[in-house]
Amino acid sequence: MQRRDVLGLMGALPLALAALPRAAQAGVDLQAINEDLALNHAGPDYEGFLHATTALKKTLAGLDDGALSVADGQGAFRNAMDGWMLVQHLRIGPSQLDAREFRIEYWPDKRNRVDRQLAEALEQERPELLEPEGIAGTSVAIQGFPALERLLFVDPVTPGTYGAALAASIGANLAAIAEELATAWKPGSAFLDDLLKPGSSETAYADASQVAGHFLTALATQLEFVAQRKLMGPLGESAETARPRLAESWRSRRSLRNAWINALALNDVFGAGSQTRFAAALQEAGAETAAQEIGGRIIAAGEVLSGMPDDLYDHVGEPEFREKVGDAAAWLDDARRLLVRDGAPALGLNLGFNSLDGD
Image (cartoon, rainbow, N blue to C red; front, side, top):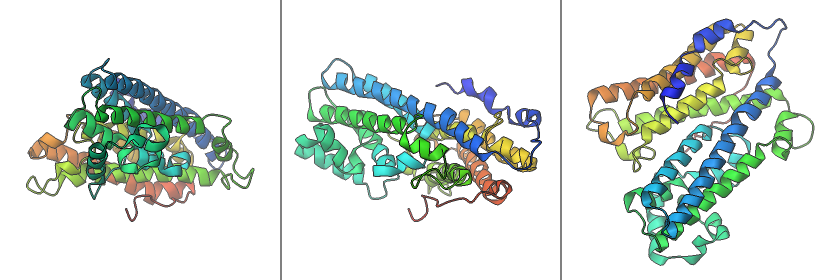
């Protein structure tokens, strides 16, 4: 995925909103928003994540048997992380079951559990972790990307060793979880039936507004997550108090790339240029200013991040760099504030539980 491929799309919000017709009927078609996000956003991006993790699984198996190199494994890791960043915000439904979100990426890791438990596994060479049931049933700290990042980028594994076999096992586990998620978002699945046919059964969502509220909550939560955890947390209040090791994926030097891809995904959820997502719905509800201000801030953050290095770790002491990261975080924070204050009320939606609360 190249940044230049999407910049033109990101700058299209004002013109796109101006071109959208005002709805003739009163009210907003929330069901259409839900169907569009499920079938044209979540479903395809989870399929992309599955494709990337399947390639990662194959590459790490090749690394384990010596057919491929650590560099090959690192490249497959980067592609799979790109795929994860496009769906990380979807804290709704299947990703919240069976701790899948944390099994994919146990981060933030406030107590350094990944390092401690991975070191223990490598020292003991636990054979059960090389089996599908074993790795899937162990601690979430060593099931996903953070543990794999250490095996590929910190002390790269050697083919034929336990570490290489464990990396292959983690890759297979990630692909298995991705397959579960992609399957859950396919048309005809039980979850998607419940989501797209609210009120139809005891397990279904109550109504379309509840579903739309969950999508909007996921958007608001990720805006906060990126601004506060991914950007401002590592940046600190000054160069002297910066803590770059708090950054996501700092070992693979891609912390800002993660945030940039998140911004693209959030812009897609909000729906610049779409006639069946939240930006258009706000216009239909008579809240054109809110649509422009929220969408414009998400786009502005993405544009700032698109022009920066992938890496945060090596630049936190640079004044211009710090200013730009702070600007991106401020845009995202402001978008979340406006979404909560103006966007949700205009659509008559209640924002649900923020999964970051109490974390």
